[in-house]
Length: 261
Picture 1 (cartoon, rainbow, N blue to C red):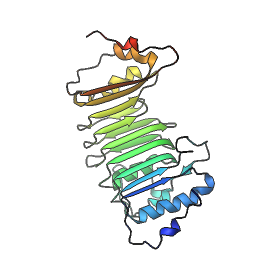
Picture 2 (cartoon, rainbow, N blue to C red):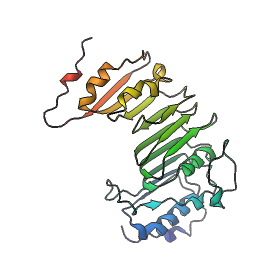
Picture 3 (cartoon, rainbow, N blue to C red):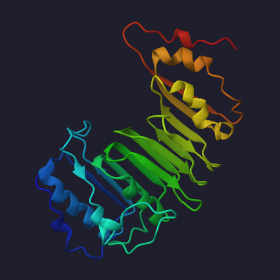
Picture 4 (cartoon, rainbow, N blue to C red):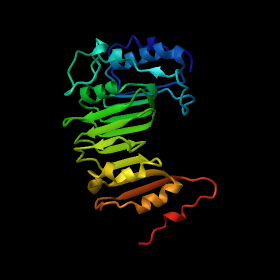
């Protein structure tokens, strides 16, 4: 793909967008063009937006070579972009009410920016974040939030995630550290990548929703299998699907997963 040029569409002022995907291997020199593409999408009240800036479509960029999401697009005065409880309603640069799905890969984006989308897009149901920097303490909280699916993968320097949203149905996270779930009566599908020190924290992190889960997927290293077997899980009467995925090295075997019924 050559020079990024959103100007080729400027004649289509009345165009509205259902899906808009920016997939490009960029350097810092392309940041302004990426910002122009985002402006183009937001001006047309995009419904589903994907910003995929992974190198060669699969690799994360080196530090300092990652596009920074422009907070100036969210508020006319970006200095007001900070946490308020409850979230404040401010004059925005664009109308984001049509946004239903948001996907960022290999992007610098802040907690406050993601929380802005969560609270200011009444039809926003899906957020997918992969290889994200700046994100550290994310709060997805609100009794009227439309968000149903949240997926976080390879989030650097991540500290905590709090979810309190009665309409939320599906959650995928790369850690149980700092995970707080409350008021998630519709949450039925969870995928978690467990690190070495996180196995003992697993039940505690999920205790509020284990009785309602229908799908539980855990990604583990093979030597963690014994710890999973020894965990004292409460009854999960509604569980329909259990997926255990393992990373094994050389001659490591999955036979240790065999459990007598």
